[in-house]
Length: 320
Image: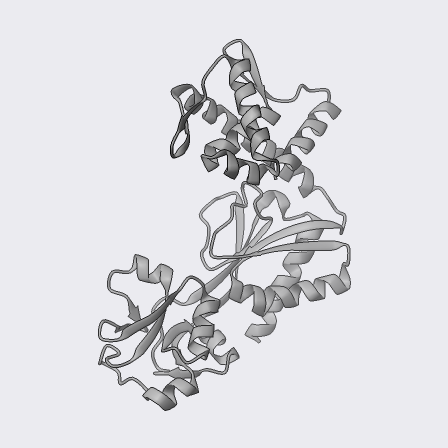
C-alpha cells in the first residue's frame, strides 16, 4: 500500500506543479519515501516487521532509518531488546507523518473515486464463513460479467481499515461509526443452538434449564474472552464442558458438524450445513447482522460498484 500511495501522490503533485509533501524537522526535511519507512518501523516496532510491510529486506530498512536520523541530526528511535521505541523527537515527528499519510490516502481515494474503468483490483475484507457462502459465488458472477476486475479477498476476524485503504469493501457483522464510511445492512439472521445428528445419537438433546450439564460445547473464542457469564441462547453453560474454543465462525460450524459438541451459530449457517436445531423456540437476543461497508470517496468507482452489486445480489438470493 505504501509504495502505491507514494507513486500516486508524487505523480499527481508533480503533474499539477506542486512539490511533493515534506515535513520539516529542524533545518532538514523528511520526504514521503522517508516517512513511509518511518511509519512502518513505528507500527511494527522491528526492522523485520517493517521490511515485511514495505516489501523490502530488513537491511534496507535499517539503512534508511540510520540515514534518515543522520540527515535530520536527530535520534528518532531507541534501540531496545524489545525493538524500536520512539524518542520524544520521534513522537513529535509521528504526529506530522500521520497527517501526511492521511492527506496521501485522501488524495488516492478521491482520484480512484473518479475512475469509471471496469478494470483493476478491488480489495474485500470479510469473515471466512461469509467468504465461502457469499463472496466466492459473488466473485464468480462478477468474473463472468467483468473479467478484467480482480478481487483480492481477505478472510479473517481482523477488521482492516478502509480509511487507510487496507481494503476497499468490508463485509462485516458490526456497523462502523466512522462518518466517512457508508454502511448498508444486507442481512439479519437469528442465532440458534445446533448439534450434529451424530452428537445427538451419542449424547441426546440437552434439557433446557440444566446449564448443559453432561454435554460438550464448542464456543466462539472472542465471545468467551469478552463475556464473563457467557450463555448459549440465554442458557448458562457453566455445567457443560467446553471441548473447543474457536477463533472463527467457520471453525465453530465445522466443529459442530464433526460432532464435537453443541454450539451457537446463525440459523442460516446451521440449516445450510444440515445440522439439527435444538430448542428452536430460543434465539440469542442479538441477531447476527451483516453490513457492507465502503469509503464514501470510492462508492462511485466503477469496479468497486460492480463488486458491491454482486455481493448485494448474493445476500439477496439467500434471503429470498
